[in-house]
Length: 389
Image 1 (cartoon, rainbow, N blue to C red):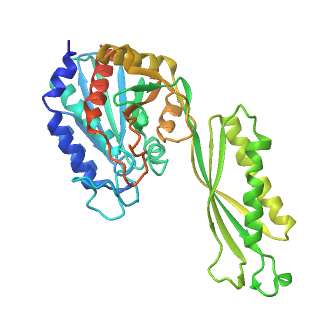
Image 2: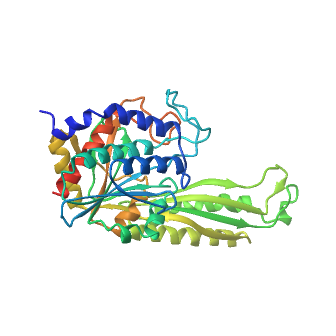
Image 3: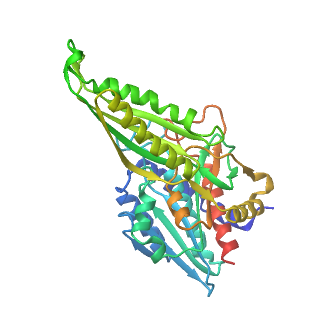
């Protein structure tokens, strides 16, 4: 027998598939989500939500109260796209060159709006619901900016939840993990300064390119020799910019790297070792290296009690077999800032399909699976009615 929430949502499924594809055709990158946030605010207002705009620049919070209950629930969706070119070939592909919803945030936004309409219509809950539409997740600090602008001061939440679609997991499967689920992420820049000169007279120079190469190799020793094999960590040098001509020894080189860990103490150790290794390697070549921390987000930690709520709701809606325990992974998510501020929450994944040819997120051929819009919306509706009962 179909659950009443699923039955009610089925009536409007085509409407929200069309909305998701509209968002997909008109992607906006971090802190530029003006049209998207306008549409979100318009719909929420039409459905009776109290609207607050401006947190994080383009963020939107919709608040709906029912009954006299004192509990307050927060549900978050991200809105931003990626600065990359789409190659999915879909009829609803991006109409903006160089911008593309390659991570499914169009689906996340639509899923929460789908639930918002149902909850405004039925109001089968007792308490306060805050729907948080966040900008700039891909920059890994949009959530932090919303918090700095007073998100939880203005809209206190007793529980906070978020979700992400996940290729490689069966369609509609709910993935949960207690404790650290996603890695911290730190972006660093290392500026190496030597002494430039002619490529034919290296003895008169201090080759910053050579120094950068030695720093890159030495950084790989951190994971293998400074971190326990039982503590996951990743150090990736993704960019080395070192000049253009073959006969010039470069005076300056810029390196950019990312660091991922699942433990705050490991994170601190790795960051410290990067600075120590970079400066020491540079000194050994009579060069200098300056390490700059560009930005960072913490480890995403899930509250087991919050996960248990998701498990109970998902099992009631779809059956116990719909929920799976998943392993932690080294991707990062700035919802971690919200869970760091309010640990009484969780972040879970919904499978979009495990077909061999299905593209992973951040792939030019990726597209969100519209079949899970109703799944995610039902979960948000069920979770609201469960917690604010």
